[in-house]
Amino acid sequence: MLPTLRPGDCLVVRPGARVRAGDLVVARPWTRPELLVVKRAVEPVVGGWLVASDNPAVAGQGWTGGEADVLARVVLRYWPVSRFGPPRRLA
Image (cartoon, rainbow, N blue to C red; front, side):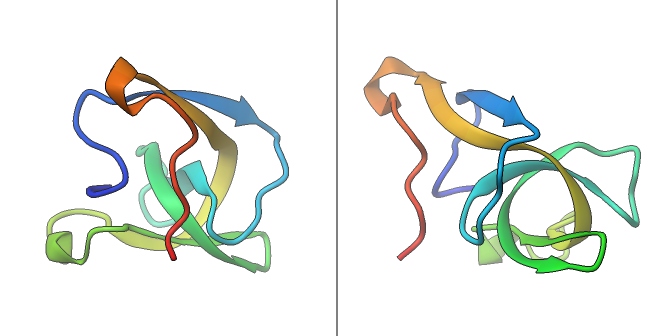
């Protein structure tokens, strides 16, 4: 999720929270149900959400987006302290 999240970022998530397009979410991809991923909610689809990575450079390097069940909304990054706060929305 570079540039929004970096390796080692620790997050607070809220299960069952209302999700809007643009939110960061914890999701379970429909095509890879063994994965839990943090992605950007793009738009609702029947039964779930379309989610995507913020980093276009990772295309083809694993699961970068698609339809998924959203389990929680990311509400806060608490570590590292220098990056404390809610993850910014994309412009």
